[in-house]
Length: 440
Image 1 (tube, rainbow, N blue to C red):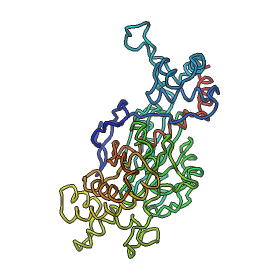
Image 2 (cartoon, rainbow, N blue to C red):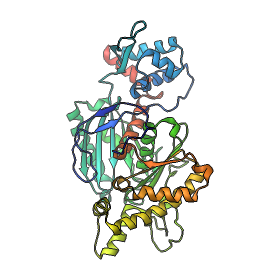
Image 3 (cartoon, rainbow, N blue to C red):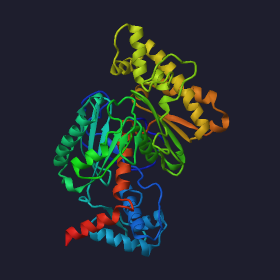
């Protein structure tokens, strides 16, 4: 995980089991940062569903776990809060754990938390080389996780089969009945139509274009399925771990490909009209015209500065094939040739980021991905170009830094999306009614 940043939003951490099964995979018992849940409120402030959702999300995110804190955070009247909170407590969505630590003044407040049996959020991260499967509670606590070796070129059919099998085992391990799964969030490495739950012409995912991923998994697992781009989820997770004054935020991931995620000043993820916002890997780099990208165009930054592109350049230098893992090892150990190629890649990426800084004017630019995690050369190179090329007005308060969540950013963002869906105004009343009916 990246070094601590003073602008990280204070929160708790949750420890969970896991195994290390390949390069870049987490070690056993690593921790996941608990982050803010519920960026902005929508709907009428006195609408019962909106109020119940605001309360449940505040408790889930740890931002308000007593009645006084709820009043301060939501700015709702205490009578309004008490009416909706009583309904949530009766249904078991929220439970009263007992008094907080003794106060010097008056009676201590009662601590609130989500019920242990409210349900689970599932996360499936589809990468070029493996699947990451996670079962988590609506309180952000990880209950079970596993990795499945998988080649994305095999197509979506085997991935759907592996995801179904994997979650069947993980739910049993976590002691979570399948009927209590509230939502599955799927992360994929390509443009996504989030409304239909399909990948749209993903350059490095052959055979996935327009495959009904959400529908297929919904039929297999029997719960709602949300599909989103991996870098979008990373940007959202990163934004919720940082203090609000670090927004707007632009996250740039450098991996097999290059992608961007954009979070607005109000905390909302910007996907664009058709879900392609942030697809920066296919912006053309100046003075590079003879390199063919996987998208079919010439000179895309992904074709000259991604981890895969660096591996190709090294292979041409060494006269033999070079894997991405080998590139990371060479960069990590300070190999001169590899370091020079990374610095050249950083210059190309910096040109793109400098233009985006002028267009978007973010408060923070985050560099993420495996390459950024093994060396500071990428970060230093991007910083150098951005501060040289962008005008002072756009950079005087700009922070360019590594990810504070590292490899967990996508998972954290996926859990945010899933929890805000499961406890959102459109779902909270149905969840309450189902639980009340089951208790009769």
